[in-house]
Amino acid sequence: MTMTPETDDIGTRTAGERKAARASDRRIVALIILVALISLIPILSVRFPPMTDYANHYVRLWLLAGGIERPMMSQFYQIDWNVAWTNIAIDLLAFVLGKIATMDFIAPFVLALALLLPPIGVTLLNRKLFGGFHWWQLLCFALAWNAVLLFGFLSFSISLGLALVFAYLDECLKPRGLAVVLALRAICAAILLTAHPFGLLFYTALLAALAFGPSAAPLRQAKTFAAATGRVMLAIIPVFLPLVVFLLFGPSLPGHADMSLLDSMHWDNPSVIRSLKVLLMYFRTYDVRIDMIYLALFIVLVRETIRYRTMTVHWGLVLAAIVTGILSMFMPTSVLSTGGMDVRLPCMMTLAAAAGLRPQVKGRLSSLALPVVLILVVSRTVYIEYVWLQRNADIAAVERALQHVEPGSAVLPAHAQTAPEDLMNMPVGRIIGGMFPSYIHYPALVSFERDAFMPYLFTATGKQPLRVRDPWSEIAVPEGIPIPTDMLNEPAPHYAPYMADWKSRFDYVLVLNADMASPSHPMPVIDTVHLVADEGFASLYRIEHPSP
Image 1: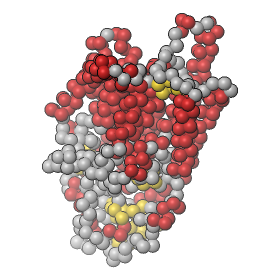
Image 2 (image 1 turned 180 degrees about the horizontal axis):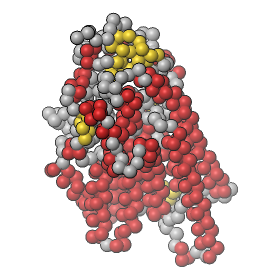
Image 3 (image 1 turned 90 degrees about the horizontal axis):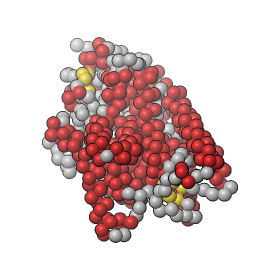
Image 4 (image 1 turned 30 degrees about the vertical axis):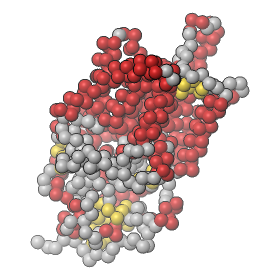
C-alpha cells in the first residue's frame, strides 16, 4: 500500500504516456459531467420530492423570493434578516435569485447545489492531492444520494461541498504565500459560517488535515508531531475570526433564550446499534437492503486495494475522517432546538475519507473500472428516480385534498400512526434512512397552494430570516411535526402548544399517511370535525365553529 500521495511528475513521462494520461482525464471528466447531468433527472422530474424538510424549505424560499407579497402571506409572515446570520445559504440564494427567476428555477437549482457540490468538492481535492482525474472520483458521485440530503438538510449539504472546494482552493494558492492563504481562509470561513456552521467546522477539519500532511510520520515521532501540531494551529487560526465576530455581534443562537447549551442537548435512545446506524447515514437512502449493496461494494473495493497494496492514502484526511467518526458516536440527537445533530459528523467522515483515498486496480480489472463504476453511479440515480415518481402520488393526494381549503384558513397537520407489524410494508420512500418520515412537512404546501396557514413553517430565530406575525404567532411554533391523530382528544403536547383549544383556532385538520393507519390508533370521532376529502394518503377534515 502506498502510504502517501505521490503526484505524477509530468516531466518524467514519455510523450505517449502524457498523451494517454490526458486522454484518460478527458474521458473521466466527460463521464463526471454525464453523471452530473443524469443526477439532475429526478430533480427536474418531480416538483416536491419525498425529502423530509424540503416542502417546508420550499415554501420559505418561495416567500423570500417574492411570495410574501401575496396579501394573505404578508398577513401571516414578515422577512427579518436581523435574526439569522448563519444557516442561511439557501435563503440568500432564494432572496437574490427571486429578483430574476421563479421557483421553477430556484428550487431545482438549490437542490442541484446540495446534491452535486459535495462530490464535485471531493473530485477537485482528490485530484489536487493525488494528481489527475480518476474513476474513484466518479464513484464518489454515488454518495451524492444520501439520507442527510434526503432529510432536506440543504444548506448543510451545500456548505460541506463549499468546504471541500475551499480546501482545494487553499491547496492551489499555497504557492502565493502565507498572507494570501490566511486572507483566503478568513474569507472562506465567513462564507461558510453564513451558509451553515457545520460547513465551517468541516472546513476547519480539512485545513487541519491538510496542514498535518499526507504522511503518518508525525504519529510515530514526537518532534515531527510537535511540528505538525504547530502547522495545524497556524492553519486554523483565521477561521475563528468570523466566528468571534458572529458570537460578539450576531443575533441570538437558536433555541430558548433561557436554556444553556448543555441543557439543550438531548440524546434519543442512545445505543451501539443506533450509533452504527448513524455512522453509515451517508450511505443510506430509502431501503436499507439496496443501500447495503452499495456500501458492501465500497468496503470490498477499499479492503482489496489495501490488501494488494494499491491504495494511496493522505493520512491527514484519513485521520480527520477517523476523528469525526469517533466523535459522531457521542453526538447528541438535538442541540439548541436543532434536530439531526448526530448525523452531521458522519457526513464529514465519509467525505474526508473519500477525498483522502486513491485506490488502484491493475491487470484486466483496470479496463472494467470505468464502465462498472458508471453503472453503479447511474443505477443509484435510477433508483432515486423510481422512488420519487412513486411518492409523487402522495403529493398529488395532498394537493387534491387541499383544494377544499379556503384562503386565509388555518390548517392543523396530523398523521396516522402505522402499526409496528406494518412498518415493513410502508410504501417505499415514506421513511428515509430508517429514521425520519419523508412526508412530515407536506402540510407547508397549504400556504403555497391555498394561501392558508400551517403552524410550523421554519421560522426559528438564529436559523431562518422569517417571522410569524401576530395574531398567527399564537398558533405557531418555529419547528414542528404533525401530531398523531389519536392525540387530538389529548392535552396539548409540549412540542405543539398550538393544540390548546385547537377546535376553535383551526379550520381544517389535514391527516397524512391515512392509508397506513393502524386499527389500534384510529382517527377519533369528534362531533365538530367532519371528513371533507379522502384521497388515500391524505384526508382533510373540516372543523365546524359555533355561529357568532
